[in-house]
Image 1 (spheres, one colour):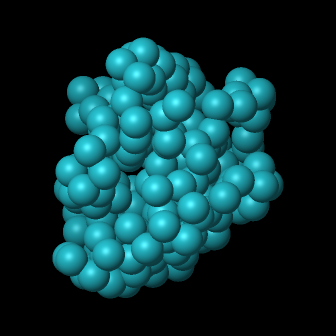
Image 2 (image 1 turned 180 degrees about the vertical axis):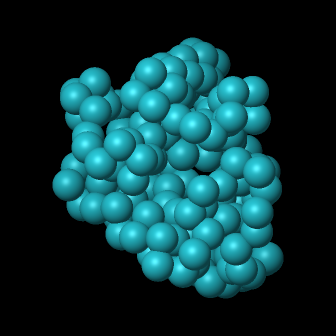
Length: 172
């Protein structure tokens, strides 16, 4: 049975850096952040059609990874994060994502203890917008009542924090 870890939270918190590092330590497959790939190809002026395309992309990539039957899977975000984007950008939830039930076993939320870095796909760089996005993201986890834990620190300390959270969740 695959144990599924998902990175979740506000932009520019190191999720895409942490995912492969965590996967290397766990011997896991990584599902890259589909929203970033989509934004790089199509821009960031997202509407409902775009967010549903990102939702479908997440699901397809995860389905393909799970078909390989890995012991561990690390997702760099998933549809719960796409729902947070819908709330931030559209001011409403998307029912298709609310109906989605294939949540990860544990969500790791990197704290906003790293500086903001613009990469051409990020939209919420001001301190108030970044905090609101984090609050919305955490709200999605709470609403779904999924298991989640904070990850803090820089570099090796951040990786150690993630590994400790996984151990505490008794998934290892």
